[in-house]
Length: 212
Image 1 (tube, helix red, strand yellow):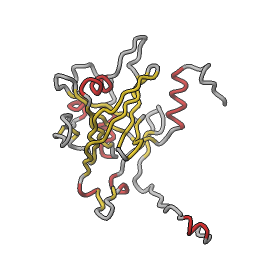
Image 2 (image 1 turned 45 degrees about the vertical axis):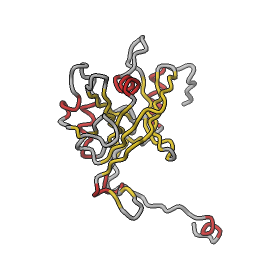
Image 3 (image 1 turned 90 degrees about the vertical axis):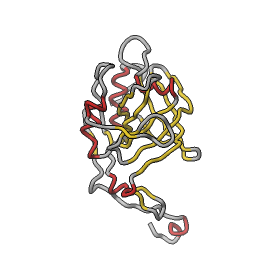
Image 4 (image 1 turned 135 degrees about the vertical axis):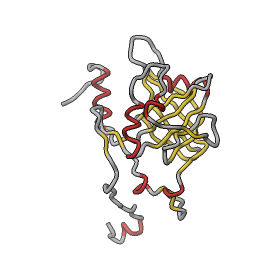
């Protein structure tokens, strides 16, 4: 089927894109408002964009409705300029899903999910204590496009539990960390346990020798 994006509803485009751009890493983002109230929300419209300087990007749609009302995460980041990306791993899948619930504003998602926080090193926003890795970020820029926002965050601190670091690189032991990915909008996710394929990059010299 062919879909002309100018002629189909926005929801159709959303359904198609999130099913095709997959698997996607999931960021369980903690942010804080001016009064110190925490918010935790998962986002799979997320990835790193560059490393020097290190920058991550997050796509945040407005709240549903006819008015242009930003989600709590976008509003908090715009007002305080800080957030933390907590890496979602297999053991945090259920808790992440609880945090995706559209709770009333006065309900603490972290409490409902049975999660706790611990102080970050470089930003005021705490990270999730149960998360094995986290990126501490400050807002670099927020770009408003239609009913969405693209938030660029400069990474100012990286936390990884010692057991998941190979000091030789240092590298992240991804085969032990077991991050998960989102596949579509139907509640489908993918695990990485026992699913790794190792394929070293071929140097040009090896390619010329026929090592392919």
